[in-house]
Image (cartoon, rainbow, N blue to C red; front, side, top):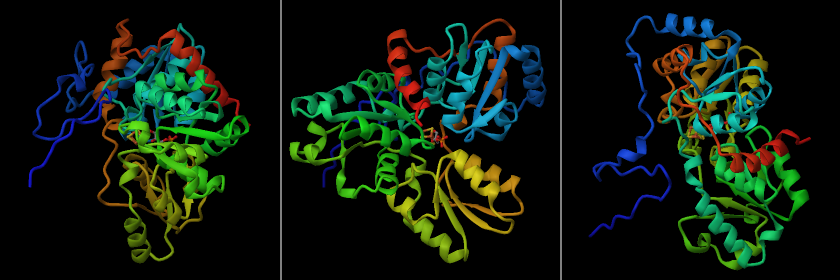
Length: 389
Ligand code: 13P
Ligand code: SF4
C-alpha cells in the first residue's frame, strides 16, 4: 500500500510531522535578546521579586489559570480569559502589563488598553493551536461563500476569545461579538437577536456545546465548516438550513478528554462529580455533571462540601493547584493521558525574570501590538462582549 502525504494545514504555525523536515520559521520570535536566565539558577525567585518591587505601580502582572505555579506566584491577578480581559481594561495607570498567558490574550489586552501602555508576553512562542486553526484568509473565503449564496446578511459572526486579533477584527467589521467560555450563552443569545444564523469561530466544541446544551438547539441545527475543503465541505442546502455554522477548530488539550475517561472514573470512584471545560467534546460535556470556564471550575470546587470527589477535565496546572489547595476534597485529573498545554507552559520563571529585568533596565521586551485598523474593529467586538447583559 502506498501512503500519500498531504501538506500540513496552511496556518501560520503549521507543525511538520516528525521526520518530515524542519521549519525554522515556526519558532520565530522565541529568541530573548540579552540574557535569558538558566532554569537552574537558584536566585530566580529573588530576582523576579526584586524586579517586580523595582517596577512598583508601573507594572501589572496578569496570570491565566493555566500558568505554572512559579509564574502564578508573581501574578497580581489570576483569572479566566474574560476576567483577565476586564482586568487589563481596568488598569489605565499601569505602564507595563505583563501577560502570563498566550498570544491572543495579550493581543486582546493591547486592544483594550491605552496606546501609552505596553503589553508584554514573556515568551513570543506562547501561542494557541486553536487560535491558529482560523486564519483570516480562510474566514474571508468562508464569508464569500455565504455571500455568494445570499446568506451573509443573515449571519452574525461570533468568535471565541481564543482567536487572533485579525479574526476579532473581521467579526467586529461584520457586526459580531467576541465571547469567552464564561459568557458564550449570553453572546449567542445576543447574536440570534441580530440575525438568524451564527458563524462560530474557531472552537467547534464550545459552539456546539453552548448551542445544544444552553440554547436547546438540536445537533442537526449545527453544521461543521471545514476551511480546508471547498465550500467548507458543505452543500448550499446544508448552509441554508443550518442555524449554527461551526468552524472546524478545537483545543488540542481539551479535545483529548474522552467519554471513556468519564465512564472509567465513575466506575472507579463512586459518587465522583465530573467537572469539565466547555472546550471538551460534546459527548464528554453531555456525560459530565457540570461544565464551565476555568473561573467556574474553581468556584464550584471552593463551594463544594468537604469530602466530595471531583474529576476535572481541564488543563493540568489548574487541576494540580486545585488538588493542592483543597486537601479536604478528593480532586483528580479526568484523564491520565492528557498533558499540559504546551504553549501556556512556555511562560516559565526564566522568561518572566528576563522580561521584568529588561523593563527595569529601561527596555520593553516582546511588546504585543495590534495595528490600529484591526484594533478598532476588534475593539468593537470586544466592547460588545463587555457590554453583554
Ligand atoms: P477560560 O480561561 O476562558 O476558561 O479559557 C480556557 C482556555 O483554554 C484559555 O486558553
Ligand atoms: Fe489554546 Fe487549548 Fe492551550 Fe487554551 S488550553 S491556550 S485553547 S491550546
